[in-house]
Image 1 (tube, rainbow, N blue to C red):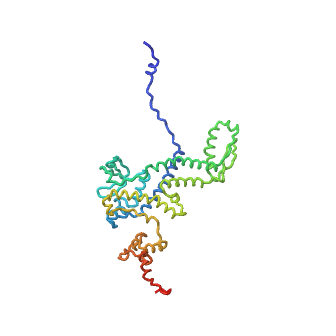
Image 2 (cartoon, rainbow, N blue to C red):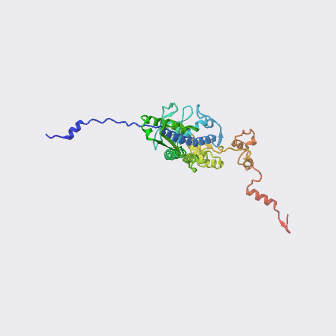
Image 3 (cartoon, one colour):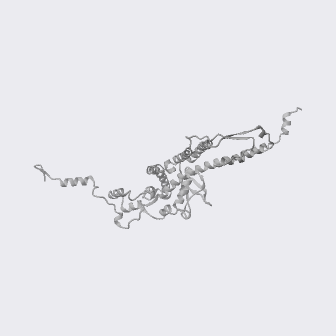
Length: 399
């Protein structure tokens, strides 16, 4: 019978207890985290707020078999989607969900109210359509399942741009922290403290040094005008502040602006609008309308029409349109000449133009009539008039 040292050691082994390492969170770490989150949220809400405000100015126009109507569907999208929210509040929450979560789900209750879902569970089915359950709106959870044709569901991008921007924040935030520390360090007070051997031999040396460094020097550096009391054997020499003329606080502000820049680019909107610059605002708004708001409005109305209208009704001219022409502010004196051209060319009626600039319409029949000046005529009519006025030529004279 052999003796096994391995068996003996195995019997003496005890199961290791789980060790939980304690992690100390310093004030500096909390401050850095708060700074990063606040700056990130400020840039995010600035862009989302501008998009939501622009979309609120858009009119959701409803048509029934080609004729524009102002019924329940018009009121639902332009005034009161549900009892607790108006159009502006509803769209603000919708855009926040769309850009933060990269998707947006709107469900309809039994009594016809529209709600933006805070959370939901999606079960995918390629052939028969997805289903949605556990739909939560504020403090209410729907008990029933929603079919694909019973909800309005949008996905903004194939890839979640918001998560990419967050990763960019974390790396760029380190650069901002380094710049802030370098700026403060370059403008801090510096000096040397000489301590004699006699002072170090004092039995209360440690307590005196701690009081001097943590109390006296702290108050001395924090005060604009102060006197520094020193013990016998201590000598402080001021080295002055190390200030670099090329480094200013504007450099840090420029780095803050950089965060707004790449956040705005993630939203496909001009960075100047996110930062609030007023130079070339008109061009920036045009760019935002072209590459940000118009595609977004098109995406919204496509989903609304295919789910709430359907193919057969769409063929008859029944649809919803998101009109983005009202986003830009229009001054009556600035558009006086273009307005005259719109009416004289027969493109707009008087009431159509009044509605476009937000003025009350005229309740007269002529205000809904398309008019055109005599300067506009077809080529056939012009040739007829020329031939009627042109006579035969005899002896060089026109008869």
